[in-house]
Image 1 (cartoon, rainbow, N blue to C red):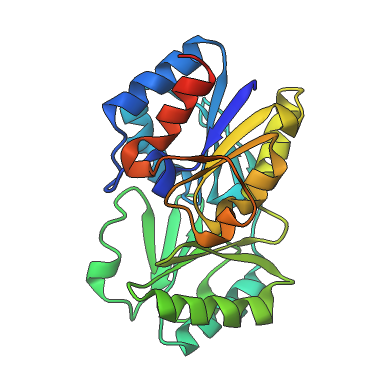
Image 2: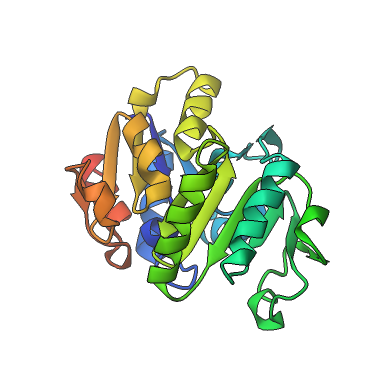
Length: 260
């Protein structure tokens, strides 16, 4: 394997955005062994900066589930968007179901003016825009819907897939989070783009993930690995299973596979 790509939430991270010291040391050893390392996440670039500081590296970033790719220097070399007309329709459907959305375009974070303040004050790295109506929101890289009740989100994701799956990528990235990305933009297409940049094939890649938004990436690479805490959907597809994110499953697997 010439390239390792890891998801963040539920995979590389413990809870609360923490990367363990053991994982930091292991990735450092991996990179020093001339194996490339990249991150593939549903987060935007701004949401990854604190994690990069912990890791002490500047890797390639596949962000917003493949809608954006950033070089180690921070240059955006891919910027795919959900068209404004489709954005409006999807956001109206979300509000019709009495849920709130978080909508992202590069460094801009859009939300409904009706959203309770406590729901959006935790995004200090973004330029916040409160909108009166959904028609005020432009093309987007990503939409997120979060709720503490997984049953509510399962119902909504099914509604959204039935109405909009031909127009956007809609997936349950975590039990409490729905991710919506531009059509034909996944972490898997992000891997394919990275492979072209490095003159490799996806078979040269190892990838780690735990959620539905990792499925296409895991199907794309030559060596897919899922976490013990993965959604059941992934366990139907893949046999390589490592320990949970809270047990440093990524680092444990890398250490053994690459003899670090």
